[in-house]
Length: 464
Image 1 (cartoon, rainbow, N blue to C red):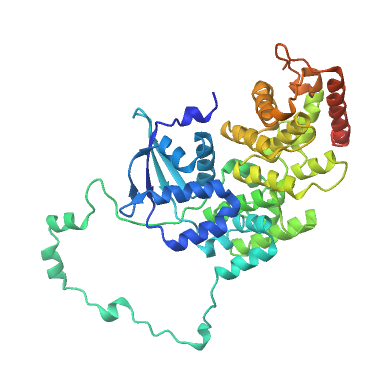
Image 2 (cartoon, helix red, strand yellow; image 1 turned 90 degrees about the vertical axis):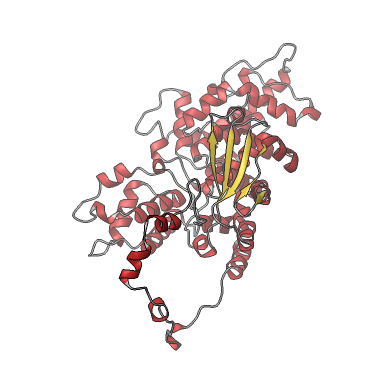
């Protein structure tokens, strides 16, 4: 049974509500700015839920089976796309486990304003990489307007107290009795309609703040200088550019001013300059990132087995570089890079975990990255909250038969046989043969040769 069935079944009921009033302009923002990042299926789910709203903020209670019928997709697809909306800040989900079947509330969140989006520092960079320079500049122009040269004008706007007058204090006391106070409060069980743009969240675990603070001199950078906004900026920049705690210390010390104020824009520029100097590239991509230090298990450890050698290698190389090495030094195709970018952004998989996925799929599908197969396994690993290379390998061992059945579903026309244990890397050394299904000697030699070829291509990284 797949993991999503533990979270959601078709008879579970849900109600849609929104955080404030959603406007037609929000539709344009989600369509043009968010859709390239979350994909058309998550976009369709948001719009479908939005269409269910009645009386401004609440929709009628219905079942997930009804949603499956409207969208013509499986419950697993709905669950996966829901997670994307949650991750990017467009949806909050609440569940009542005491009800049978369970009851969900899907609270639609308004998108960021164009200004917030284009100055975010993460979303805007990913959008640029996703749609390209020309389209990005067109969207930037579409969502901007000519500014006012306020130096040529003087403000003449009247203040509130210039126009309106307050009552005398004795009159105020006379009318402010208990009944009046109750009239001014919202009724029990209700709340006033409000609206706030929900920002996506990055876990603190993606950046080692303990190591960051340990190496900072309190005389140069006191802890009070790392405000909540600065802390969030550090997490975003570390996530986007792959900056470690030690390098981030240097960047922060370079931008802090004599009054111990850290200018976030200056920190962003310093991070961009650092990235360009270190990588020689103008903008980062997710596929160029490596496994964050907190999620490495072989740091400062000498590998003793072949499996440990592979773990250390996959922890210290980016998915993009792994693809380059597998292809003998040739640049990966745009479709392969796009696929890797998609699963890293939408499924929130870490680089090392993606490396295991690439390595596994390459061996099982004749050195090709099948989009549907990769996405299916990536979605499964995301639901399992896999964070380390070792966890990914162990899960691949346990679920190898299931993954092979998924691969066979895609290759029914070719009647491919199941791969036996001797064709797999050491960390997948299990017996996957089925009764009455044996691979031919020619097939065994062919796949074993591919495995050795891949091992040889990766060999140069194992001693790093």
